[in-house]
Length: 562
Ligand SMILES: Nc1ncnc2c1ncn2[C@@H]1O[C@H](COP(=O)(O)OP(=O)(O)OP(=O)(O)O)[C@@H](O)[C@H]1O
Image 1 (cartoon, rainbow, N blue to C red):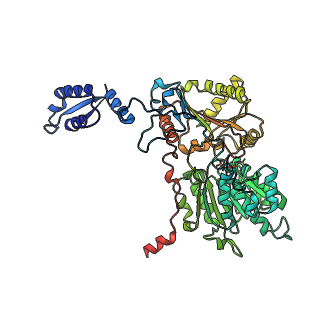
Image 2 (tube, rainbow, N blue to C red):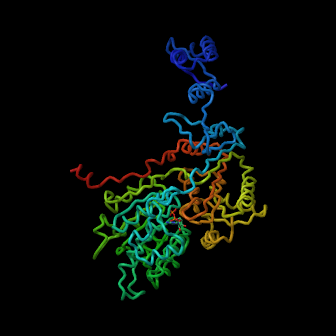
Image 3 (spheres, helix red, strand yellow):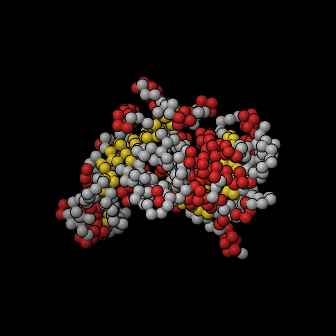
């Protein structure tokens, strides 16, 4: 029997004064006082008795505290369910709101116990439209005219290109960001996954570059790099470059990429004949290029850091700092115009770690940066159904097979991203799926660059439906055809969960995207409990609230020091 020691006086006071008037408890406690061995020990102060409270009684007391003395809290009301559990008593309706100090009773509460295998719960999608769709586009809101890209006064060719690909109304983040970028402000923008952050920075960049372009300029010789976009992976650099090329096409602006895994020879070739107007690069490749003096960042008009959380992660931050120090970053909008102008700094991401300010304060005045933070940042996506299944490690492959079959039967198939925590798991799982006859592709960081090239693109194009991958595919990669994200291995952090889950429910993507997470290890359970708590409380995921803060103006600090 596991037990705890409590002071006799404290325990008896709690028993007598509290609402916990359990006769069994009192009887047992009194019994154990007379028998306690601790009374006899010389080290204990005289008169202090120690009683042992059995674990099962502690649990009962905890439950009484949680339910406030009632047998159970009724969390189900008429209408749609927010949380749907294997045990219907733990369901929670959309209409039920937890009290401020009320502890939610979690389906995943006992998931560290081996008997919980087979248990499951679902956080239902309670909204049909993503929160980042501008308010006036939501159902039932018809009063205001819809905002369009024309409202931003960007050149008409760009508006036409967007219309051709069915992008007519800006998302919330685009509405907030584009005007500010056009005004020359440095921006720190944090908004949900799939909310259209790429266009938020690319549209104003291309608009400005075409406006600044001199008509008589020779297209090749006078070209210089005017915008650098830093991204964490090769795949993402290709994706951003594709969007950029589409937007640049009518203006003859050139976009190039340099990515990790490419030798110096290849990097030199990129810059040899023709400098691009827009360069999309990974930090490692750009550092190599800068060291070999292949390019010069002194005349930049824009410096963009996409996927800010990854780029300011310790694995990249030194390189990012090194690159930023070679560029001349503006400290206010006036410095971004005219002769000898400096670069406007745009940092975007779906989550933000602490420490962003530390690096940025070395290159610009943090006080001048405009922080744009979406309302639903770090919340679970309300328009995506998210299921958690407690399953034995050995059964995960079968469960995955089952989920793929169900998707085929119920929705006629679609893109599936299966996330594993390690490259080795991707390979191993790949062999298992081969044996089961499931066609798939694999994408993981340990693959040679040549093998990796084009895998995500072929998945985007629909050449293969199932992609087994590590977290390299969770950051920024966009495909509207993903219907199901499977966390074959439970993600290691909230940030990873947000990014992985964010591959569905994207602007312009499938509306019925789902996330399925397998939970097999006891150490996965805490993360699941936090996610379930956030869902039941309708709050953001814990530990991420302070991730983004308004940078303090440097000037004030200096004045204080004087
Ligand atoms: N205004 C819009 N209307 C409809 N679709 C849009 C709009 N803006 C962007 N999209 C589409 O939304 C998808 C997601 O955009 P994008 O990749 O820029 O998202 P993101 O916010 O950068 O996501 P992540 O945080 O995952 O990087 C893209 O397919 C893009 O074409």
